[in-house]
Amino acid sequence: MELFNSALGKNITFERPAYFIMSGFIGIPHVKYYYIFLCFVYIFSVLANTAVMAVICLDPNLRTPKYIIVFNLAFTDLFSNSALVPKVLDVFLFNHHHIPYNDCLTFLFFCYTCLSMQSLNLVALSYDRLIAISYPLQYRVKITHRFMFSVVASLWLSVVTVVLIATGLLTRLSFCQSVVIRSYFCDHGQLYRLACNDSTPSFIMSNLSLALILWFPLIFILCTYLSISYALSKVTTVQGRVKALKTCTAHLSLVAIYFIPILVTFMFGRNIPPNARIINLSLSSVFPPMLNPIIYVLQTQEIKESVRKLLKIRKKSGIKVKKVIIK
Image (cartoon, rainbow, N blue to C red; front, side, top):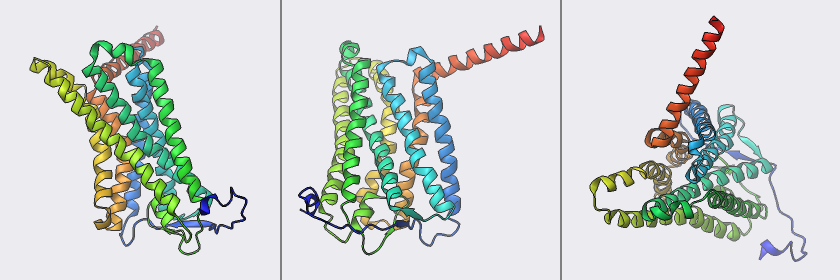
């Protein structure tokens, strides 16, 4: 009931520290090289996701409902690594381990918003594949630009609301003992466990968020592919099945890259040493945003053709400029 005391007009004093201390890795020599590696991953991620967004914007053939979600995925990946990696580098590479209270909550909000959007983008893409394969004749009617824009807006609104509530509940906690966060960022679970007053609302919100942002998307995607498998079983020719399945390979790769490391961490988290847990979580946070654009470029025929067209146009324009200069 402490959560509602302020609403009832009761005066409550919360003990909020001036700062938190992020411990990061403990007892690993030359760990700075790992953060330098993350820096290179971040740079590549920014360039790759920017390139994918540019290709989608420049090629009119890619302005389809499906690529609204792909563009949103690339934007989310770019935003995710930009919210996480620069701050991690600042804290651990430049030894700024003390992070102010408000900055920590802001850091937490943006990190969890982006990580949550990544899983929900995969849900939207799985629904797109379901309609495309199971109901091909109705695809253009059901999957429209308006529908996809509504889906993207709804996903962002839902995630921001959930993460905002979770962050708001942390402001109702008192921190009167340790302020050391045993993680590489302002981890929600680590934070509410440091509280010295009742953290039940944050505990409930943590489990609810996990169900909405991890388990629901995973179950939905699995059910989607069970339906797709049933639809493919009705296709008479092997070539037809393979052709339809090829349109799902990029999405399945993204699902595996995103969910497998996170599931391993949550299923065996208590038995994993703290340093190994930090490595697993940090890589599962920064690697998918780097790999997603590579997978889509290599496994999606439309983007391959679009990149080739854009490169040809650039070469032709370069040749024309040279001819003009020679004349």
